[in-house]
Length: 373
Image (cartoon, rainbow, N blue to C red; front, top):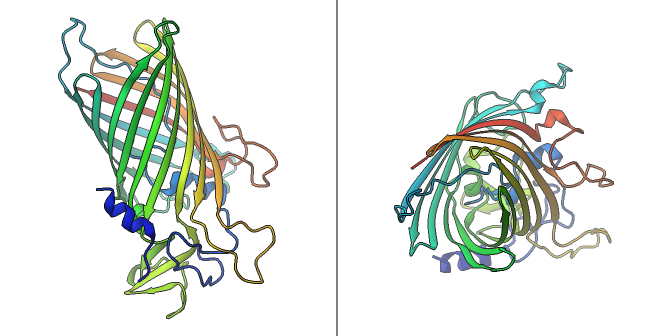
């Protein structure tokens, strides 16, 4: 069974089958198809991001500027803290007037994030999330009604304030996060781990705060493609016994679903606090992802084909947060996650709301409650 270089590197550090491509079972440093099929917008929204839950997302941060619970008496804060967020999300496809195009979507999620502060400057954190789709439709990808899905566990090390320039007040921070692949999606993708170093720049003036972040993510997989057990294949997946897609030991590769190798993301956020308890925030996330490369070696390869698939996506969020008590807050807003360009690649999509394909539920309204200690 051929494995990728990522399997070796991942060990040291502690995503569709088109034609019957002969390269489907090649190692990660090689390639899987001469041409890559780009997923439809709905598919990109259902599987964001680098195809794996971010340890600290990633995937598309929501601008929910919450107020940190500080010690008003000036005493050192207790080094251990934790937060729990309960989120309700309703897709805009629920409100489509045409009953034949209407696509109701409602999901409930919970996220838990404990953290430890060392030397009053370095933060260590864990993050884990679970979600349940309360309705069944084709964009979910669930096997049955109200299936509970667990996200990857994230571990992060952060230095929120490396340096602050005394004249302008501009601050710089850094962090690095790692993914522990426990989700069904990551296990199908044969993810070993993901490493995501990031830098941040922040500036505030009175009640206004501005933040910018840039992050690079490298995934480490055993195989270049998503794989399935022969005994648990999707109905849409066909394979040839002994073919290139048959990896042996009961493992079948899914061609066209090439895994993401690495990505570069930029995030921007602005927030303003009113009356000390109400915060309005807007956030924008731009992600550029690259798949594993593979050689275009046969005579049928198009002159326009690329060895490495590449995709661009954006996410936007507008929210209003209310924190009446120190340890409890509420956030209401709208978020959107979509391909950067329209299906014909001729124009950019509006990143904060999907006005083009509302039935795909690329945008949603959300209400979340966060408790912290």
